[in-house]
Image (tube, rainbow over all chains, first blue to last red; front, side, top):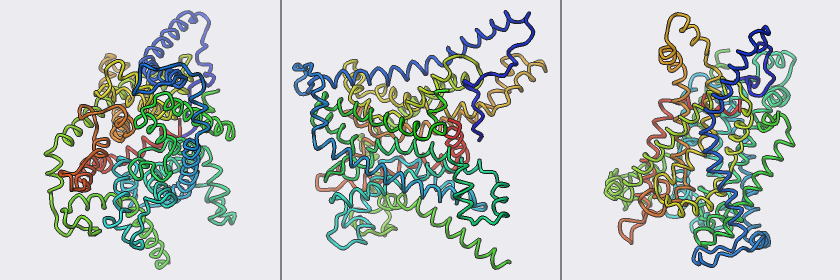
Amino acid sequence: MSMQAEPAGAPQPPEAEPPKQDQAAISAGARQERRLGWLLCAPAVIIMLAVTAYPIGYAVYLSLQRYDLRFPGQAKWVGLSNYGAVLTSSFWWQAFWVTLFITAVSVAIELVLGMGLALVMHRTIFTRGVVRTSVLIPYGIVTVVAAFSWQYAWTPDLGYLAALLPSGDAPLTEQWSALWLIILAEVWKTTPFMALLLLAGLALVPEETLKAAMVDGATSWQRFTKVMVPLMKPAILVALLFRTLDAFRIFDNIYILTAGAQDTGSVSILGYDNLFTALNLGIGSAISVLIFICVGIIAFTFVKLFGAAAPGAEVKR
Amino acid sequence: MAAVGKTHATRWAVVNIVVVLYALFPVWWIAALSFKDPSTLTDGDYIPRDWTWENYRGIFQTSEFTRALINSIGIALIATVIAVVLGTMAAYAVARLRFPGKQVLIGMSLLIAMFPPISLVSPLFNIERNIGIFDTWIGLIIPYMTFSLPLAIYTLSAFFREIPWDLEKAAKVDGATPAQAFRMVIVPLAAPGVFTTAILVFIFCWNDFLFAISLTSTEAARTVPAAIAFFTGSSQFQQPTGSIAAAAVVITIPIILFVLFFQRRIVAGLTSGAVKG
């Protein structure tokens, strides 16, 4: 559970420098160890590079062409004009703001709810197993399944939740209500994951420190904000980073709940539609590359803003 | 004092019940739908009035579902095995060996964990069509194992760091051969971590929707999440609601079993990898 258990890259302790006469043997051993390390990592590295780096390069290449799958023979080099077309299109910006809105709102709600849930799981003693089991179900359940459950719940004449609304209301067919329902589905599904990450952070807060703060007369709110949150900061940032990136890629929930109708589509939905409905590989690839850049910017911002606390920081060391 | 303890306990009980209801309600709702017959489907009741297996019988009679179920199981299992084997090798190196480039591996896994899958959909779609693996099992196994490798490497290296590797040396001192030491000491110590990672990776592959609808076009490789999005009713006048609900319940069963039997491990796996990452 500790953050310091990170042997990688850190300067190694001097145990590797015993008496001089052994040096040749040791460096042979070290060389062997090095070779074994590379051998063991090679398959994973090759696969990860071959399936991500090469295709993203290929996506950049495709995005610079006019490439309509209905007329594959007419593929033509068009430079950056696909990007121009996407970035001046209202569809992209609509999808972009919708995605940002869903990301910001759902991650904020998840952080609050997840923290509450983590505290519940941390403090509950007798029924911990039951709570933990039920909390893992939203995490594990197939997103599409959960999305269908929500969709049916909000469908007039079918669902229990729609029945609570004035008759004639179909919340999934209006932009704002649909957006909130998408956020609800997203929050339901991913809050447990957030809570588990925060729970791991909670376990790092020493009980004695909390007791000491209590003896010093700190209220429970003060203990939470002044003791727990600062100590949990690394865990909170990791959870936020992962969830933000994950929320930005939102696809499944929207696809099932509204299919992007009424301006509820995310950038991922837009990319998918351009590819499989409009069959435009050039534009679709340009959108793919733009999403990739957005994700890069988000990750970079997190690492820059929060420095050493973010997981990426360890890579630089 | 006793009264205080009692209200305290009651309050926790209420909180716990709220949490459990929160987590289970949508699952219960879709399960209830799957047991309703078409005439009571729209009554909005939480408990079906007339229980029926009709929806389940219906979906298991169509190859649309049974084929998708086989695809889902096969693809997820194969991708899991490959990812866990390769992940174990890399994680062992990360946890135990000293070699330059380790940080590069960790950084790369992190980058891929953050990678937006939609960015790969268009190039993979075209590449797979060109080399003829579009709409095949391999076509889905490749992206699944790639995207689960970071998860496998992180979780496994977190587990491997906790293993008391000196026991291996001790066993050798006691006269065990390297093979014996590996089989009788290291394997039992590493197995729980490997198993937990396998569950997490399987859930990840089982869950995917984007690749499943983008890289398949027929029943040949379409997995259940993608297949139910294309379900149509048994007749053209019938909504597929009941069938979708039943199929949804079927693919939720393995998840519920995992969670019931291995909840402690799943929590350990999820949290150890994340915090140490």
